Amino acid sequence: MTTEPTTDTAWTAATPLEAGFTLDLDDRFETARAAGLLPNLHGMVAVRHGRIFFERYLDGIDTERARPLGVVRFGPDTLHDLRSVSKSIVGLLYGIAQARGHAPPPEASLLAQFPEYPDIAADPAKGALTVGHALTMTLGTSGTSLLSRIRTRGTARSPWITRRTAAATSSSGPQWDRPA
Image 1 (cartoon, rainbow, N blue to C red):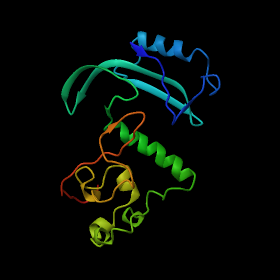
Image 2: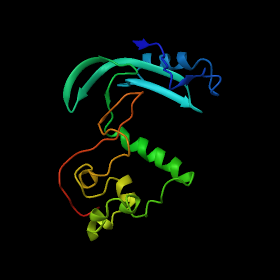
Image 3: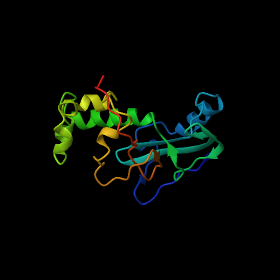
């Protein structure tokens, strides 16, 4: 079952045609869903030039940290555990930011991006970490424990995301190994 698209004051809507896509996008989506080509898809929001041109939510089986939740009716305000998909999103956003000159290269010092934490960078092993280590998840830490004090400036940290609120994930624990 799908729910109708919704928008709030933070987003404006566009038709698929206005966004440069075919008018029958909804029909194509439904055909693919009915044919079983979108297994375990809980929702899709497509944005172009800051405008939502396609938004659909489905009912589906979900889990929370391997605990079954049963069938969940997803919508724009449903909390959703992203976990591994976050890596793809971060990689995509990093590539865009780097192409626009807004992000350091992968070989740049990671802790140099956070000069407010000189005590962390004073450790030679940790000071040798690069942006690339963070992007490839080869920091040698458990989750983001090494950087647990480094906040996503002004953003709450949580493994959950809704369309209206995005948050960074984190883990805790003082585990440390050399980066891979």
